[in-house]
Image 1 (cartoon, rainbow, N blue to C red):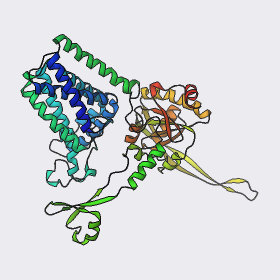
Image 2 (image 1 turned 90 degrees about the horizontal axis):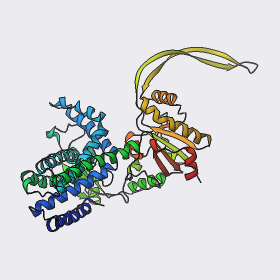
Image 3 (image 1 turned 90 degrees about the vertical axis):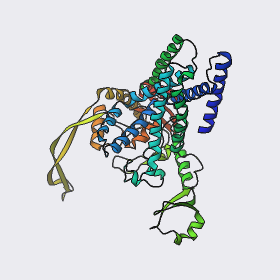
Image 4 (image 1 turned 120 degrees about the horizontal axis):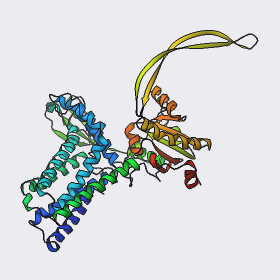
Length: 485
């Protein structure tokens, strides 16, 4: 689905709602305003609902924004704002649920015409907020990596890789929009937002005040519980991410890598440094006329063909071992059943360290082939201590218990975490009793694989058979009976 087909479907639904409002309910004050109420209301309900399916996805996207805002504002005269963003990050899950519920509630209130003045202003302010987010996402493409967003004099030609956040997350993982499209969408929504703000008295109102109020309360309670179910109690009800049961990660990664290798250079986009004039030269012509475009005069940007298949986060599936070396190819060669435990964050803090002296003994072989001590040396080692979140440790008890059973049944078990200090990982394993291989990967990749920390996936070869939220993890006996036949 594209944004254009989505808008078409929303417009059709809005038109039907408008006809019912006019000819059945006879509540229309202004036909255009009623249509815009239904259009914006349906759009907000839908975009909010696909995010409610996966509220952690929205939270992770907000974390990215907060991190970029902190680094951007701390270098400006309004640097006092910067500390606000780490605080928001601390409560990002709750903030995510609040924004999702508010978006859907606002959509319902637009459709019913509830509290018209408040709804009009709330819609305007929320669209303005979304426009700021999508505008920041898109406009950072004009900001060189060494410059701050507010150094407007240093802005240059648009470069996609300069963008601080790659997409706004407007429709979660259901529909990925290019930043420019997201920004233009929100600019478009400002038009009905202004119409509502200055013409709220022309907005229709459906049902009676008690019915509208009851509907609003039911929306808040229902969507809040639904959000909680999709991240506190279970993984999302619908999986829009590339890592899902039935996907062969090995084959998909190889297909995406090949698609990227087959991408061709179609042309060069040349920007004249002095004037800023941009021209596009076909690739073959550029090679023939290379001398006409010296590097000291022009900046070059390749125009490439689109990959044959969409490139997903599976393309970034790269694992490293405890020593930092890549083990991705080793992982791809695993055969049979294997359990992957994903933990993008280990909730603990370093509380101190102590120094201990240890002996290193070197042996040699004597004349009679016996081992004798050759030398003894001492060295100091630093042992770090950590304090772990007790609630988080509790989550690991069942994981360790069930995965130990799997290990005894000769099923391979391993964990993947973010690239923490090896000492921290060793301390965590000692605390939890998780005595299995622990690999490392990028935390964004781990968040994409499963919306649970920790989360468990069962593979057969490279194919995901099932994934479980920590609260829904069955016993090993149940897993074996259902999936290992």
